[in-house]
Amino acid sequence: MTAIHAEGLRKSYGEKQVLDGIDLRIPEASVFALLGPNGAGKTTTVQILSTLISADGGEARVAGHDLTRQADDVRRSIGVTGQFAAVDGLLTAEENLLLMADLHHLGRAEGRRRAADLLARFDLAAEAKKTAATFSGGMRRKLDLAMTLVGDPRIIFLDEPTTGLDPRSRRMLWELIRGLVEDRGITIFLTTQYLEEADQLADRIAVLNGGRIVAEGTAEELKRRIPGSHIRLRFATEGQLVAAAAVFAVAQSDPENLALNVPGDGSPATVRAVLDLLESAGVEAESLTVHTPDLDDVFLALTETPEPAAA
Image (cartoon, rainbow, N blue to C red; front, side, top):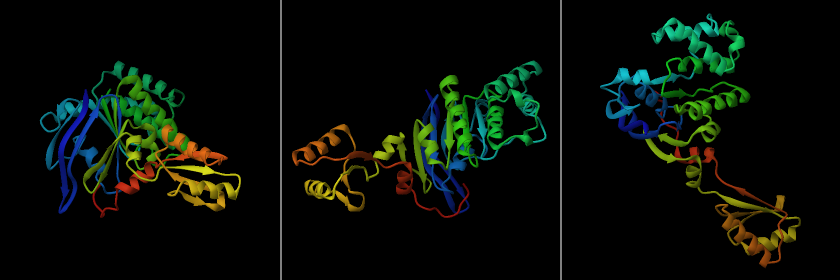
C-alpha cells in the first residue's frame, strides 16, 4: 500500500520557484528521507503534504485521502514534528501529553491511558511529573515525538528531528523511529541535514535540488551512481608496490603509504580478479580494503548551492 502519492507538486514564492513538479510514491511502514541543500524546498514539501500550506499545482494523496478535498481526513491521519521541540517548558511531561489528548478530543480516561503508555514506551515515566524545562535536548525530543503519537497517526513527518542533539541522543532517537516503523507500521517522512541519519534510517532516499527530485533510491543504489569506488592495496615494501603498479595500468599509486588504489566496484568478483592478477605477477599485498562513495559524495555530486529562498 502507498502511504503518500504525489504527482507534479509545484510551489513558488513570488518569482522564486521552490518546487518544480516533484513526484513521490512512499510505501506504508517505511522510512523515506528527503535530502537537499538549505533552501531546496524540503520543509515546503512537508508543509504541503501536512496541509499547512497549499501547492500551486499538482495533486497528492496522503494516507489514502486527497490532499485538497479531504484535508481534514489527512490531518487526522498524520503527525508532524518540526525542527524544534514543540513542548511547553512550564508543563510537566505528563501535562504536555494530556494537553495533546485534549486537543485530539480524547476522553479523560483514554487521554490518561495514552499518556501513561507513551511515557513508559519512551522511557519517560520517571520524569512524568517534572517540567519539560528541566529536560535535556534528547529528552525534550523524545517527549516531542511522544506528543505527536497521542493522536495515533499512520504517517509522521519529521522535519530535521535531531538538529542540535549530541550523537548519543541522536542514536537514541533513531532507535525510537525504527521501532515506530517495525512495531507499529507507521510511515516516516524524514528531512535531515545529517547524511548518516538518512543512511542509517531510510528505506528510500530522494535528493531534492533546484526544485526537482534529481535522484531517488536506496542508499546503496545512490552510492553506486557516483564514481570513485576503488580497491586499496597496501604492500610491505616499495618494490612490491612498484611491481603491483606495473600490473594495473590505471591504478593510482600512493608511495608514501606503500598503497595502490585500483578502480573497481568492490564486488567479490572484482576483488577476486585483482588478487588473481597479483598472484600471477608474484606479488602479495599486505592488506586490502574496499572504498565506495558515501552519501556525502552523493549529496555533493547531485546538489548545487541554491539561491536563498523559502525552505
